[in-house]
Image (cartoon, rainbow, N blue to C red):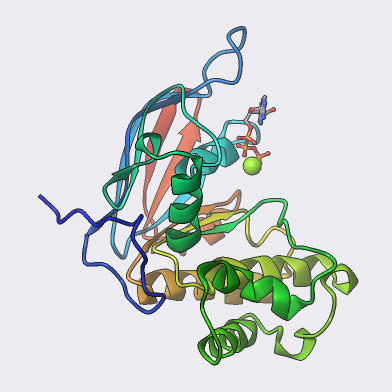
Length: 245
Ligand SMILES: Nc1ncnc2c1ncn2[C@@H]1O[C@H](COP(=O)(O)OP(=O)(O)OP(=O)(O)O)[C@@H](O)[C@H]1O
Ligand SMILES: [Mg+2]
């Protein structure tokens, strides 16, 4: 049995736990209403430390819904999500929020970048929520801004950015606290080919460097191939499309 790690306890931003199973889904099912078919039923999945997975699938099939369940932002109808051995359904709302803050980095399909904060303030937000202090806070923020090519725009308000720049803010913010689990929902949809390629490389490198695991949702086969393995979500469940790179 892998060692179970209590992620509800404070976790150093620098420290990565030794538990090799980052995420486990057990018989996960979700439907939005009784008069519509289930989006998916009985999904089992295990994601181990260092694993980077791509999930493809048609629009509306349930990819974003699945990511929301993994991050504890929505509840399944049945089945369990275990993050670092912790069953999300066993935690109250505050417990799930704290666990998500520490352990999960989420690049939302709709970004959720705060327009009236600067680029730097947006990216530093996860560290602020975790109580990470100076100089570590600035060091880590600057490092991430540099990694996504936004250092020159650090003091700009997010509302003054282009769509692609906002997307890069969202990516830096999802990575700045070195999450054990990175969930990225179409993170390169708004980027030009060169920025997309750089971003995909960065996401992969960060997942590997954080000794965590990652899930990349994408419509692009080229993007999916930057992951270790590719799954397709379709009516009913997840199907393997084979190895990535
Ligand atoms: N909060 C909600 N309440 C009811 N139905 C919802 C809700 N959110 C999504 N849906 C529906 O569930 C289905 C799956 O939506 P989801 O956003 O998970 O799809 P997706 O695979 O991410 O699609 P895309 O590739 O377009 O982003 C869609 O039919 C959508 O309309
Ligand atoms: Mg989606």
